[in-house]
Length: 624
Image 1: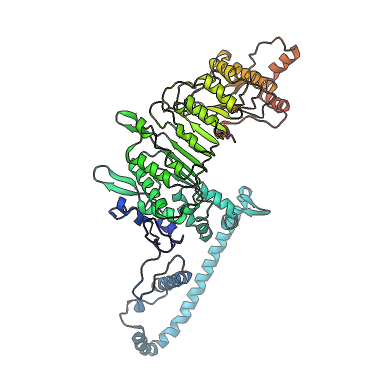
Image 2 (image 1 turned 60 degrees about the horizontal axis):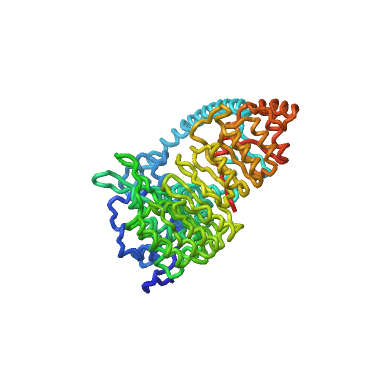
């Protein structure tokens, strides 16, 4: 029994049985208006009344769950079998099937007829026996012909037979599908269900009883991701036709049955703001209803607002605010002991920003370890409230939320990593003055700063002069390493730079001309940045540049390049410190893929090979 803050008892705890049956995304409850509820009935969503525990029947006994009652299921199956066999049997007499009389009276009346037709039956019995023997011989010859044909077909197809390995046993393809899935370890089945969305998990749970039990495994529901059609139903709109709207009943059942397993809740950008508001409302009411925290494992919450709306006039960028902002603040106030929090793309007005983190600081001041705030305001506005989390280790901010005061306050905290992230919604602003960064380095010499640019943006990277930048990360498909940018990186961060990473695949093809490529820029970074140990290149370079980078980068521990971006060329002129033999070796190996790929691991001293595009697009940098 659990008591809410208003003193209302919630009733008995709910079992997990029945959630799989009710958790379907294509449940078309057209015309069911009782599921919407209102703000005054928010607490009523979470009264623990399992759907399978329906009221008592006519006899006063509670109804049993059909899915769990094996005896009832077996009886029903036996009853169906006998009824089907009796109704569809080809050996029933025509008279018995059409007789309106009962079985007892029919047997009594038919007894008189048996004495009259006894001689007739004895004469016809021999004739029927001969006929049955002839039919049996015909069927035997026919089956022999089929067996010979099947043996010949299997002998010709034996060379293309598929063989599967399960442990130390060798199984045919048919045997694997019959027995292999039954012996598959539980942990592998859990990994498979993790990759599926809730609707596909529901379909998988209908395969067999073990899969039904794995459907309720805690590992399967560690991460809950809210997408456009998650927990929705189809509802007819008079003007727009059928629309997808969030079903409060499905959301309630989801939280009550598997909400205790949630570790991460991720709200992706949803274009339907009504569904987004309803989800936040139901989740906040669920967390507020119980006195103790109903999601004890929850430690991560990520919320990203869809600030882009596409219409007839094109793409419009709008901000949050109003009821959605109030629900976000209310929801952050109900979450306890959170360790990772991300609130992005709100684009608020200046007067709406100050109270954003006040609700989160109510219960998470000493537990929050990482915080991400991107583009909370439409104009440059410093946010000093990020310094009230005393245990904060990692902070991601947009450059428009930084100032001299924020930098100096962060210098006195336990912060280890400061990521300055720039994307397509970042408004133009001025960088922090270099004097503040110099004082920041004196106050906290071990703190690390990273410059990141992501999204579909073509704006140049905003540099922070004289900041202790340890890494520069490009997560946009449009940016290239220009010679001017390389010069500023070497001048400002040459002593500290450790990471230069280009993630994702480019949208445009690089030039094949040497003076238009970035070969010289990468080689300059490797030569003039002594602490550089991670280099990821997605741009087009030559095999000769690859060999020079491996030769000069003696401290490279992670060296990743795209195999599709390597060209067989050696356009480097001979340098003064190069011997004729080295220049000849460079020209020879720079024009052969196999020779170059054999020399690079020998120079680096560890196993190395270039990444194909299919593998390179999944490369992600995780800094601990």
